[in-house]
Length: 133
Picture 1: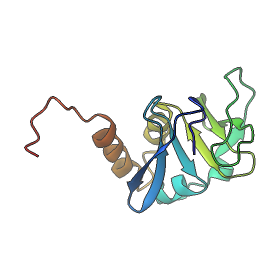
Picture 2 (picture 1 turned 90 degrees about the vertical axis):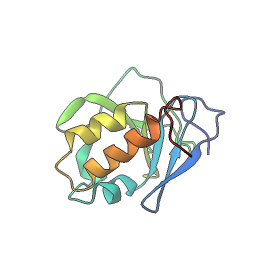
Picture 3 (picture 1 turned 60 degrees about the vertical axis):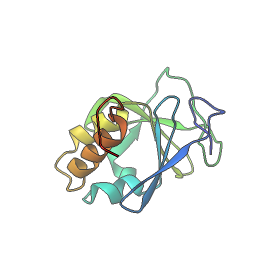
Picture 4 (picture 1 turned 135 degrees about the horizontal axis):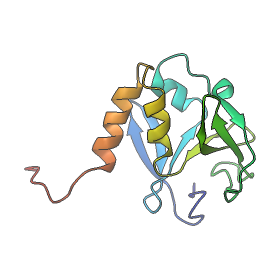
C-alpha cells in the first residue's frame, strides 16, 4: 500500500498488540484498517457511529486499499479535526497528529492510554539518548 498523502511512498507495517498499522515514514500518517481503532480502544467505540461526514477544502486523498476517493469526516463531538475515511469501509487515515488528538479526546476508553503511550515511545524516540543497546 502507498501513502494517501505522499502517493508513491510505501507504507511501513507497525504492530501494536497483534494489530498491524500502516505508517508513512515521510509524512508520519497512519492507516487503520476497518475496526482496528475500535479493537485498540477496547471499549464502546464504533467507527460507524462516532464519525459524521463534513465538507472540507482539504485535498482529497485516495484510500490506500481500494484507491477510491476518501470521505472527509469529523468526530461527532469534536469537529475541529478532519479525518479521511474510505467510502467502502476499508479503513481510516490519520494525518500526523490527528490520531493523538482523537485519542486524547477519548481517553475514557480502556485502550486509549496504553496506545497513546506506545505512540509516544515509537514516534518520539530520541536517537541521541544512550539506550545501551
